[in-house]
Image (cartoon, rainbow, N blue to C red):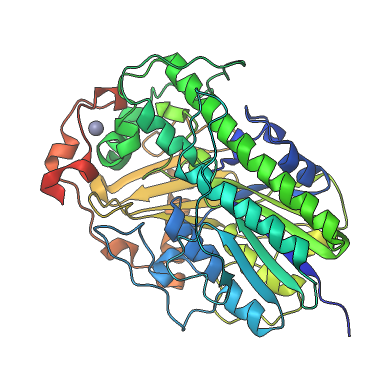
Length: 469
Ligand code: ZN
């Protein structure tokens, strides 16, 4: 019988594809770069929902958020944990002879069923640089990496291994904003400030859907950036880069442990992120509501056993929903029925990405205070978004406008493309049973009242408002 191959998955939290230096970005991550140079780097992979819990519930089950109904991070919009009727990557692999183990961040809505999950704990470590203080995110990662290394040091590989190292960084950037809220002096650091991106100024905000225009009102972290200068935003990029560097060093430690275990040659390594980060595009930070490239497009790298080519970059719309069928195919495990992604495993041996008409991503709400149902369809060079509130639409030609600086939806000359993308969305809603058009948006008028512009926001945001509780 053919020897089963191991799979080691690295999940990061909030790593934007565009941030990485290997993709022309400002953040240096040598171990991620090494994985890409030794394997296949997929250029246009989209997350199913740019928020932690819904994205994770989707890729672990291989199902759209509207199917598994994990639509928020919880709090006011309660979610029902995913039940036995949804196979998960963990359940299918553990039923087929794999030892499926998970270390680190869960936040999965029940979708890690089937994995043996290590406890989520923290290891308090001292700050290394006063400009970039650590918080619970980095403490959790410090614990996760120690436990992962210990596990690999003692595992006997008597069963094939599916191991997940689920890191929270660069998510520590969210806490960094809290420490630097409003008008402030940046703490100096030893290094160069990254440049701001070409879409840092948001000149087109008046042509965007209402929930995008009032992002500051529904998003705690965005509201905390009111008063920031250009240099404050550049420090944000420096901090983000720093927290990514911490995660990257953890990846290096786990890869070294894999090498010492003697199992490296029998192990496929997969690296991706649950969603991206605005990285100061449109003067915005972290993620919420929008479906722009910075937040929906994530790295996806395959390296190691079974990857027949090195240093290859492949372009073509791909989804994190593809992980489940692809890993089943790689491990010669029967795929469950009803998965929403595509098997792209042929790229490992040298094939092209399969043809596909479109990929989709969704938004509903972070915590349930403001609800802004939205959908994104990416097809060929075109990208289309629709929000129910105000019936807002966006259309971008990514070949001409990769930074989404000019919304074409309301302009003359694009009606044919707009109709085509509307039809694709309608087809998607019908074929996948997506109730999008029957969902209700919710936003109190007081969160839609100030002059348009994130820097015109004043005071708290909806999730902090006692009247919204
Ligand atoms: Zn506002």
